[in-house]
Length: 163
Image (cartoon, rainbow, N blue to C red; front, side, top):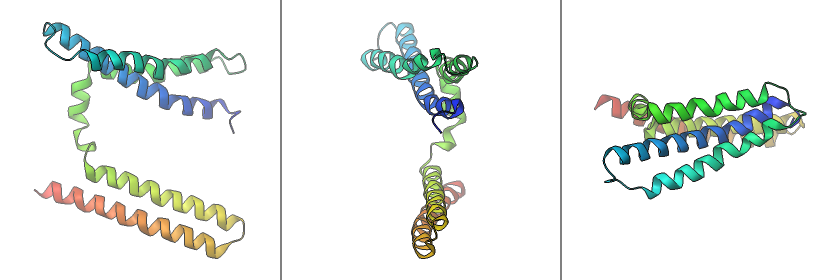
C-alpha cells in the first residue's frame, strides 16, 4: 500500500496542511504586529514561522524522488499552498465562516462517528477471519460507545441552536 503515490500524498498532505496553516497564521501575525508598530507579541509568530516552515515544507523532499510520478511535486505544492494562502490572506474570514464547526457538539459528533467507523471496520476484519462472537463484541462495544458520543454531540448542537 505504501507503494501507491496517492497513499504517500495523502499521508504527506497532513503535514503540508498543518504546516501551511501555521506558517500563514504566523505571517499574518507578524504583519499585524508590523502594522501596529510592534505592540503585539512577536515570539509566538516567530516560533510558528520556524515550526510551520519545517513541518509543512520538509515533506517536499519526497516530491523529488525519481520513482514518484511527475505530478507528485505540483500536487504537494497545491496542497500546501491552498491552506497557506487562506491562512495568510483570509484567516479571519475563514475563522468567522467556520465558527460553527469549532463547537463542542461538532467535535463530539466527529469523534463518535470515527469511533463507530473504527468499530465497524474492526468488527468486519475480525468477522472476515471467521470469528463471529468477537466481531459482534468489538463492533457492538465500539458502536454503542461511538453512538452514545454521537448522540451527545447532536443533543449539544440542538441545545445550542435552540438558545
